[in-house]
Amino acid sequence: MATGVLAGTPLTANEALEVLQADDAEILNLLAAAFLVRRHFFGRRVQLYFLLNAKSGLCPEDCGYCSQSKVSTADIPQYNLLTREKLLAGAQAAAKRKAKTYCLVISARSPSEKEIRTLEQIVPEIKQRYQLGICASLGLLTPEHARRLKACGVNRINHNLNTSSQYYAEICTTHGYQDRLNTLLASRDAGLELCSGGIIGMGESPQDVVDMALALRDLGVDSIPVNFYNPIPGTPLSQFDGEKNEIANETHSEGGKSADTENFRLTPNYCLKVLAMVRLTNPDREIRIAGGRELHLRSLQALGLYAANSLFVGDYLTTKGQLPEADYAMIGDLGFEIVAD
Image (tube, rainbow, N blue to C red):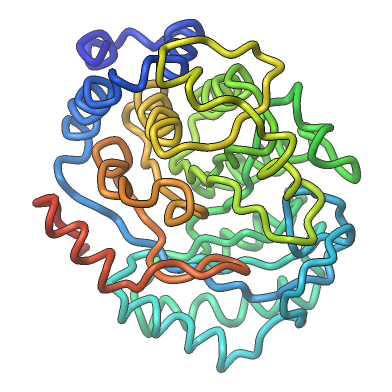
């Protein structure tokens, strides 16, 4: 499989699905294949990202997976865009934690004019002080938004597809898959790099995960964050951690294939299969293990880096990550190195 990918033969949808449905006993073979591809394009390097929740809660969208949405009753902080001083402090923390990219995230349908102006003022200062790449996740963007963000020095826009086009209506109704796609296209047209990935474990089928990975390949996104759904109490989709995520783990451990309509409980091995599949379908793209890795990969976190070449270091939006020192030790124990430039 890896030989074909490295020879320039794209993985087919059926082959990608076979990766997700492989017997758990094949996991080391799948990771070995993914690592051949990862090593060819990225060597043993690991890129670190630091994420700041620059505006929390108060969102008018009904994304069922999100603790910050209007339909969530989760107990989380709520605040408007952080002050200049706090945004700069976040940049300083990013640099201290060996991150090369600082991710600024706001909860909103779209950024306000005031928020865009704040970024136009702060982004040049952050880049001058700390030499960080800037990735902005601001909701739905117009072509004008994208042009202004590019002009002020933003390097990359994050806007996740999250799942397949077919499944999207199951996780959000206040905007659609095409709205997200339009934001990515407008950002690309403005000359911004694209960061887009998904959330695994929201009740979708393996076919939905494959369709998302292939859509990202077709878009040619630069960076793919793979999140594993963390069911925060109070979010509508948190039910998928319980009674609706009832696939029997023995189905995977014995090599059986679940029907496309089955909902899964995430297991560490399934998460590793997802990472391997995303690497094999998007061979030369940066792949980042994002939210939920500590919860779902657990003791197998290190194995994920045989497929992925990037991590968030520190906390996520409304959930905690493991200590940066644990990430540094994990990377070092693998014999990998943190990207220094």
